[in-house]
Image 1 (tube, rainbow, N blue to C red):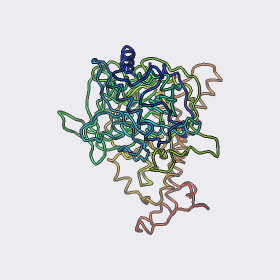
Image 2: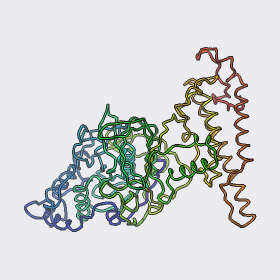
Image 3: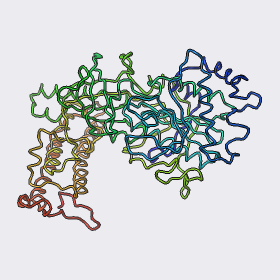
Image 4: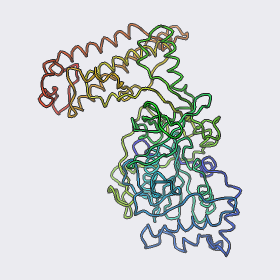
Length: 579
């Protein structure tokens, strides 16, 4: 929970109004039927659910899993009380002893969940089918609330990263009889104000009716991504990509290039996959790369910037520099569905229906130092019932105020490009490291010339084209896998050069602007700085080539006998320019 130590508490009604289907006209009819003597699901004389009984969970001696079976009984009664115009489309299961099947490794066991009804070839009790995660505690304590909150948010995070189709996900926690509704999309995560399941029983009915009769789209699934098949537990998806004229093309995934962008709960959820186009149901043509991302809705799409840069390079007769930029095959904002291609899927416009959450407080998800979330009914042992596994580390850059739940909406964007390269951090040749980053400096110089500044530089963004692999593998020295720490250090140091170089340009232009108090294009290219940046890299390459690490004589040695690089005390690898 390092990226979300706390969550905003929002008014329950404002949350339900924004993210659940509007079934308000049916709630009273369902409640009336549940309270009839015939159904007898809710006792109006005692103001209690019949399934809960006369004793609250906190007063009962049975184990937690048995006590909260009443949640399933309330669900079943509610579904039976639906009017004829509504159809139950999903199931709810209370079972904390079973681990749902998953794609991304996970040993967590929610206390239950809401599930789609069987897709072909998919186990129903699976994270691919789950849209709602459940957590329960017999007693309502601060420690128990934090424990449930952490588990709910872990499971929601897992739902969003485990399945490429997810736009958002839900959670429901109950401590004794105090319930809270949880929600997260790519913009923010929130928890509702609490309500009592007996006294505020109509709130629970509203939630159950809304999700029990919802479409896959309203349950957070993307209508433009379909699960084609499961091959050895690896999902194969069909992505629809619409261009600016709403022309649709479909691409089927072959393998994942990168999905680290999904490790941050409210990040951009960026996935990059190798794909081939689907025509008449069959894959055809060469492999390409597809990028699926939730970007800030007010940003200019990436393919538009690329088209402008490439057009400017052509106009300036800089043909050789085109190779530093991706070639767009097709791209565009993702529509909410095939039936409404004019409406772009957006966290504010479509997911939240242009409604704001009303923030009322903060929910802490981390206990004070020295305390743990372990309780008698829930342990932190991996694989235990209700255990919360360790999430991959998020990639945090800068400060984000999580209380601004209604700010900075994200739009869904998809981009297919021709080049399928190898990410630089996966390459194993020093020649690739230096030459690729040198080319990156040239590419950045072209961006600056045409009025653009790259705002998020790190080594994972750089890739080497497969067509150039012969050059890289014929370098004097090839890095062995056991030298990965040194490889990472080289990436880090060279990336810092690029970042500092850009900051120097920005500082120079900011100073010029402040001096003149007139508009200055802060992204205009500075040839002196470009040359200095290239000179730094050339100097590093020259030093590395002259060192024992890259000396030509080592080329004749078998890989296992080549000299290791110098290291400092403690095992830290030295930078190449100091080797």
